[in-house]
Every structure is written in structure tokens, then in C-alpha cells.
Length: 355
Image: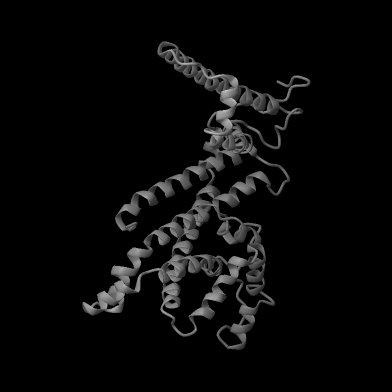
């Protein structure tokens, strides 16, 4: 039912602000009750009550840290908490291209958006593609450990290798992806041209249009573009390992490989853990490289990650959007990231050494 002048978007927003304002008032009321209780204790003890001027003085002196935090906390509330809570609410509505207020109001539909997502085969395909990105991230980390170990031991040519691998990190990810898109081009790509000149292939390979080769091409891109930052941090951690420990282990007869696994890896495990956690979270948020490389989602939707799927819900080919489904999808992604992070922190006790 549409009521002239009604706007379900504003009603939802104002309702949310009313709830948050009420919670703020309750919080201030609790503070007031606590202050009254403290004043009662002061009265019984025969001590003077704090005045308004003394409270202001404390905020600028003793409690100055709280005063400094007031503005950032307010900013977090306005620009983070309110949008997040609003997105939670939208996830339970039919807010889409056909229900845009004030012309067409959206309504509460419960868990229908989540049901729609879980019944969509494309969602499950995008989830599987995201695990493929996780595999590439772990592979990139393993390669980074090996390369960093070579750099730290001053192997000849390792420093130049380090510079080459750091290029993707200092360049725009969009620019890097467009470069690889040109490399993989069917007609004029450097890769096809080189392989044909060497006689390894007789005709060009459709790297980005063939389901057989698409994941291979994207795996190389993901690994190459993810190693630069890892190598820099790991190299710094490896150089910081005390040489005395290696010298003592060598005197005891420990070989180079044994020293690496028994001394080096445990000491740099906090850095590896940090890179693993941030890398896995970044994998679940992967969007740019796949969207730039194959805006249509790739062959058989092999380039459709969960964030790409969310993007398609917001901006589909017909020009419409489904904000309700997109909001629900955002919360599914948030849950996935939370679960992966918790599992990593639980597992760190078995192999991460902070001593």
C-alpha cells in the first residue's frame, strides 16, 4: 500500500536513529545514576562534591584521553555503526529496482533474501571460485617464504628477483590487471605470440575465454600480484633472526635445512601468521582483478567471486539492483571472514611462536 508522501527508506532510517538515540539516552542515564551514587558516598564521607567547572577541568587534564576519543568515536558511530546496522535492516526487506521509495515502498520479507541467495547456483559457484582464490593466496605465501629465504641468505641474483616481485605492490592493481589482460589477449597477447614463435603451440589459446585455461591464467596473476608485499615483510623478519642461533646450531651439527625449520621458521612464524590472516581475508574480498579481467564473470562464471556476485546484485545487466539481496550477501561475506579469522587464531597456538 502506497501512501502519498510516505518513504519507507526514511522511515527505516529515522527508526534506526530513534533506536540509537534511545540507547544513547539510556547510557547517559546509567552514567548519571553512577555519578549520583558516587556523590552519595562523598556526602556520607563529608567530602565536597565535584562542580561543573572541576568536571570540565578533568576532561582537559586527568581524562583528556576520553576527550580526544570523543570525536573519533562519534565519527565511527555516524560513518560505520549506523550504515552497518542499516544494512542489517535492509537485508530483511525487498528493497530492489521495483521497490524504490517514495514511488514504490519496500516492505519486510524476513529471511527471503537469504533463501534466494542459498537457492541460487551462481552463489555456490562464486563461493567455490573464492576458495580457488584462497588456494592461490596460500601458494603465493609459500613462494614468498622461499624467495625471502634466498634473499636473506644473499643468494646471487636474489635482490633483483625481489625488485621484480615488488612491482605489483607499488603499482595500481587495476593497471596490473590490464597489463595481464593484454598479455593474455587472444589475438595480440605477448604470451600467445611468444609461444607460437617458439613452436610450443600452433594456434592462439583463448586464456580468458576458455574454461580449460581460465583458472590457470588467473592463478598465475593472483600468485604473481600477491607475493611482493609478502616478500618485503618476510625478508625483514628473516634478516632479524639472530645469527648466533644459527652458528650455535651449526656447531652442534645441524644442517642448513634443519636450521631453517627448527630456528628460522619458528622465529618468523608471527609474520607468516599475519600474512596468512590478511591474505585469507583479502581473498574473501577479492573483486578488482576478476572484474577488470572478465567483467562478465569469465567462462562458466569461473571468475565470479562472492564479492563479484554481490556487485552483480547491486548493478546487474538490466540496469536494476537488488539492495536487499546485496545487503544479505554482505552479511554472509562478513560471517565467512569472521569464521576464517577465528579458525586461524585458534590454529595459531599450535605453530606460531611469540617467544
